[in-house]
Image 1 (cartoon, one colour):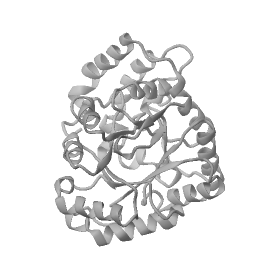
Image 2: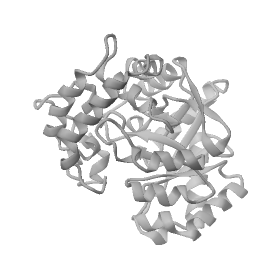
Image 3: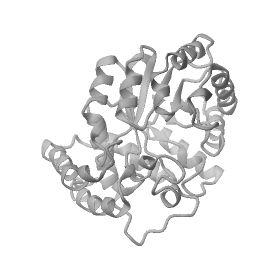
Image 4: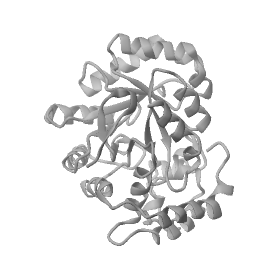
Length: 327
């Protein structure tokens, strides 16, 4: 597994990490032993980077990772968590007192004295331009509650505002073959500034796996059922903001680009890994087999230029005009 330098952190992480939203909630049920087996399979495949959040299962995801860290202290895992979604999404809730309370809770869940990385969890846009917010984040570092901080964003404008802050270590943003906009400005700006890029929703909520059809039914507690139109949170987090039927059609065409011996999902991950400036991509996994298959994408040969061009052409023809300008 390739390990890449994490910008301003001065530390390396696996180029394919593991997103753990699904171990907490909103992707159907995942039992405790099944979740721990996913974490173990990822580590055995070379993954050294877990991404979680304090609201994934109201802390369940963090707690499971904390248990795993206690059982495998030699695994060398870098854990990024997120904060800010425990209160209504108002700028005035992003205060130092709340940051201290939230990070104390995450430190307890994970069983660590200092968080490796804490990220603002897709806060309101004005937060990314608030000097007071970033001063508070600097205070968390000074108090050794966190080693570093970053932001998770919905829009490119939010990402660029955060990159301009000298203390920002990372930006987490949706990036996949169905969401190319970050490649225009955000990824180059982060690369120039030494800010790490964490690519999330890399498979467009599974669309890019090529496994879904119009007859696919997701569980009632799966966000792919209850958030297709942004009913619960930002619509861009579900299928990358692409309409399900449009995404299915594009996914069929994308699957044809997969090289021999690689699945469409692995091809999508390999495409992201190849983008200059990307530090790590964080696909989720609900089974050890998925975790291993995702990690294996890092070892695929680089996609040829013709395939990269075909991805751009697919996006331009089928999706660019249908994706909301916000994304």
